[in-house]
Amino acid sequence: MPSTTDQLVMRPITVEELPVLGRLVGSIFLNDHHEDEEAIEAPVYEPERSLAIFDGGAPVASAVAFTRTVTVPGGPVPAACVSWVAVAPTHRRRGLLTRMMRHQLTELHDQQREPIALLWASEASIYGRFGYGLAGQSCLVTVSTAAARMPADAGRGGRLRLLTADEAMPPMTAIYDSVRADRVGLLDRRGAWWQRRLFDPERWREGASSLRFAVHHDDDGSPDAYAIFNTKPSWGATGPNGEVGVREVQATTPAGYAAIWRFLLEIDLVRTVTWHLAAADEPLPYLLDNPDAVQQALRGALWVRIVDVDRALSARRYSTRIDTVLELSDKLCPWNSGRYRLTADAAAATCSRTGDPADLSLSVTTLGAAYLGGTTLGRLAGAGLVTEHRTGAVAAASTAFQAVRPPYSPEIF
Ligand SMILES: CC(C)(COP(=O)(O)OP(=O)(O)OC[C@H]1O[C@@H](n2cnc3c(N)ncnc32)[C@H](O)[C@@H]1OP(=O)(O)O)[C@@H](O)C(=O)NCCC(=O)NCCS
Image (cartoon, rainbow, N blue to C red; front, side, top):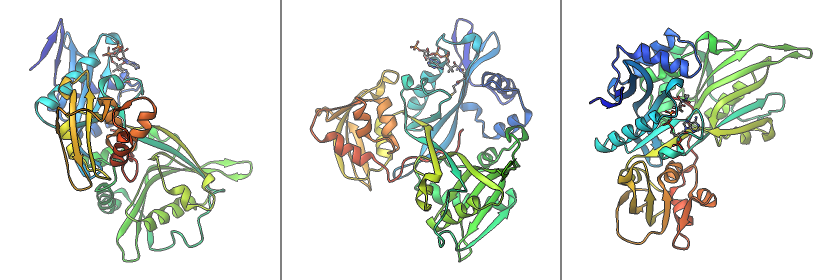
């Protein structure tokens, strides 16, 4: 049902309206309109999950959700992936984003859809007020190939092949899905999402080659690692100064990971390897004799919004046994506010309302930051965001919530 305030009408957009909305969103993100981008976005677009605000018939704001899963501690869970969030410069700071955020979350709750929502933020100051917590970081990795040396025997086994995109797709999807089963932060990727992931228009390349695909097979011939990358030639006074730009590396085994990195670091004429969306805890420095050859710069990546506390907390698993009462505050989604007993371990979890006294109190934003197990409750408590009512409760919950590795978010949606 459309909802109307003055002449502003909020409703889903149709497939036919997609180009008009695409133009608006493109211009808000400071881009020209490109038909090839529209073609790559259309197959992942879900009209019934879109939201736009129209002023006199013209769209002036949008927010869409994609139906995907994200791997959390314990395995994949459904997640509403929020994107295309944009308000026209002519209509800003009048509450349009607030209206869309409230509507989206209320609908997820009313329809008992995904227990969590995810997004990438263009600016980190926007989403905390809507209950999204910064749950994962990505890392800009820059490697000086002249300084990087792998131990002589590392990454030597198996066989590496350079393939076309079509040839590489079957092994890449198999490797990705195998890694995704327990790598926190990875999203499921149906066909159209893979196409979007490999979208590579010339205007994005800044002088680099088109994408290349390297797939490693172990000694038994099974694919165990891949790299998607490009190359950029450069020549200086002292000789070659080429670059490799990594779009994605995935590996099911440490041996595959080492082999892919030996390949990337030893391409002739290359002096620098750059990877923009590496994991926050990339093992690469520890593969090298000289870990300082790898420069690492963290930045915010995945934001998590708990839609329903009980459903979200019982959907994940915990690294140690926990029995605790959490007191939650949630201004935007008042159905979440109150006390919950969480009883859980590595195999099962239950979370339900309780009248018992709280062990910890925190906001839904803070819980979202801790949900994927990368940002510890101990760290958040250090920022004054968790109040401990029973001695030891922060330490116990912090350990139980923590994942083996922090979330890995190689893909902006
Ligand atoms: C970010 C954006 C969607 C905000 O839309 P909006 O309709 O102006 O937001 P609202 O009027 O609902 O603002 C809600 C609150 O967020 C604050 N806010 C909005 N945009 C903000 C920003 N970029 N940085 C910091 N605070 C921001 C507002 O000041 C307001 O604060 P208040 O509640 O204390 O008054 C809009 O500015 C925009 O389209 N920006 C460019 C595209 C973009 O960055 N989109 C987000 C993609 S992840």
